[in-house]
Image 1 (cartoon, rainbow, N blue to C red):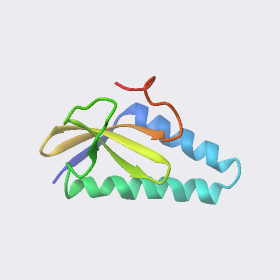
Image 2: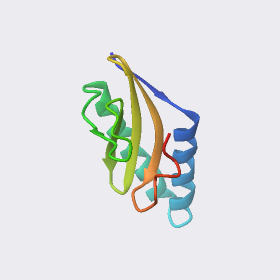
Image 3: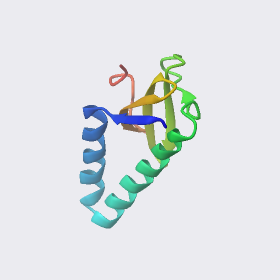
Image 4: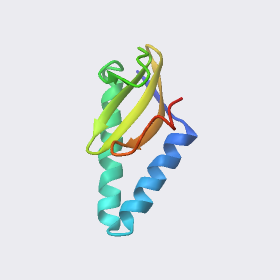
Amino acid sequence: MVQIKWLKSAKYDLSEIYTYISYDSSKYGSLQLIKIQNKIKILKRNILIGKVVPELNRQDIRELVEGNYRIIYRVINSSCVHILLIHHSARDIRSRIL
């Protein structure tokens, strides 16, 4: 079974996403969080399903896309991944790259 660990930065991002969307609708804020969390669950079946982050071109740092959000994660080993950050795709990610 693959262990998925959320780093503080990713937890903070999730909280910020909810807060921002909830200004208009708490229902849609919650719905977006559920969509992101459900997308991450697919990593339990295949940790290499995400594509390599083009800005880094490293095989261990990959991304899944859910709507407008890039879910950036690091493959630690065959049974562990770390969720690094959740980033809106319209924003410049270079300032946040690890």
